[in-house]
Length: 417
Image (tube, rainbow, N blue to C red; front, side, top):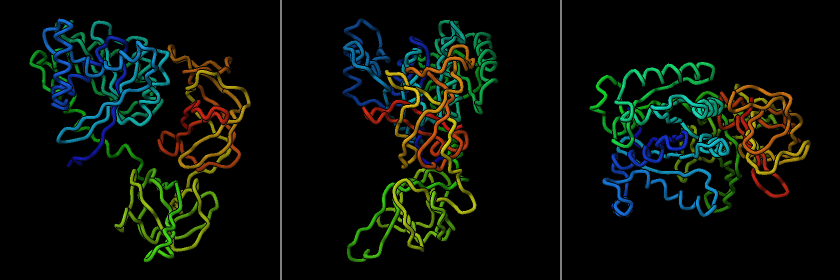
């Protein structure tokens, strides 16, 4: 049974004019997720522009005007709900100079939708988007072969694109790929099944998103609880209460579990788990709770409560796949603040092992300069150990960001290898 409140995040990526805006507009329009006043405004604008029907691209292209005024737009988020699920769409720009935006939008996604224009097939950008999706370990990919109306809804064209894409994705770590032939403009296979493509036996896009099994995307094995703050209410009924508040990063913690506090290594048992004024038997990712322990241990922000028989690896030397997000390039051997879960430490980039050429997907170990949008494997040294897991096993405890101390800007995001 599906949890009606389950949230699915998906990111859209595609080349310019592949129809991303139209596809999102069609999803919102056909699933009746648009307010009437929004719809009215867009119908009026469509009439002024001389369109016969509603120009669906206008639902998301309110941002275009801001772009023309020279305001940078990172990632546009859209929210909608159906009776089966809640959705957050991260709409990311397609150009190569926006690689960092795609990385940002995709970093929390369950599903990546990659748009392909049926007339052009798999192009450089398609390969790049698939590569980033596999690098970020997005568990599911939906390849939307759009504009099928412009190739006479040809099954042969669709099958050729499927085999082209499969050849590309076979070299990557992509587990679940699905292909949907569609016309976002006419609404074929977006929310409603297409009558123009009886040869396609699969479900339309919305049904696929609503029924996709995502609860196993979260790591339920490794219990990790990064402590954000210590709660001491000091009021009647709670005089001796000392709770550790945070968000369960992965796994399940139950009352009575034997736990170890990292990095100190002290052990104890879970005495209680509280959510507001309710006491729970267990907490699992991504719940935010407060935990109390049987023993009085010195615990502060940045420590991690884990199960005693399953601990992360404390490490000061970390290998990371890094995406450089900042306009200014990385300075060799300069110091940054590294943020990992609730833990902040000082760190230094020791070495750039190799850089990826995002177009050819080849590794270049000669070039060690990190500029904006570069993706590279680097070695980082931290002042104190971090409790890390590999990113492919745990997206929360396997990710880091680097902050420039001088400007307080986030300069890079990384996945621990």
